[in-house]
Length: 174
Image 1: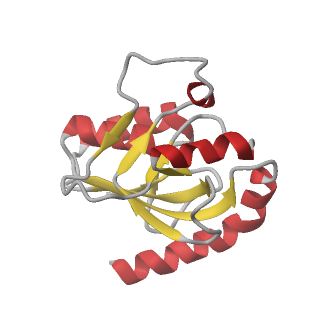
Image 2 (image 1 turned 180 degrees about the vertical axis):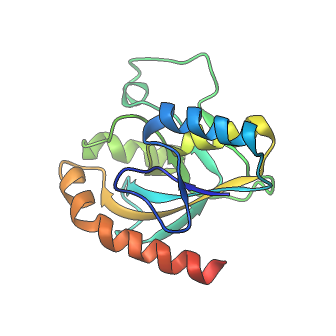
Image 3 (image 1 turned 60 degrees about the vertical axis):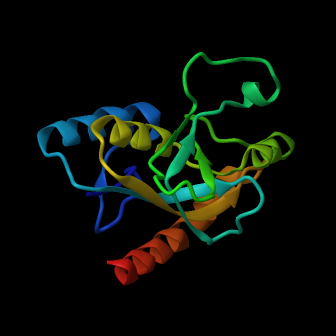
């Protein structure tokens, strides 16, 4: 099963599941309960913390849920904040998820120290649901913006081309 977020980020080959951590978790859980797939693939856009370039296509099986306050040592969590379906333990880019988009370039670059390279709102909850159901899963992302003060404007400017690139990439892959 191939899924995407929805709203303005839809694809002809994917089922929209909702924007953000909560909508994705609820709707994907419902879909898995009704008709468990053999494999789950998330396709969407992402912001780069600085290393991945605009319009790069990146695949990952590891997500984090690390808030900016954690980077400033202003909060903690008693729960796991990293989830992976990577059974080969090969090094890959970790995708961070939050219901907020990072716009502070200095803070966003701190994610790189943890091996976290991208930001996507849904991927952490997507992988969490997949892992809970024991379903192999991964994600394919096209970078639309850097996580800086221009993040939203660049996302809007680049999202159409990013979606076209993902359509082409997925057509070649399947």
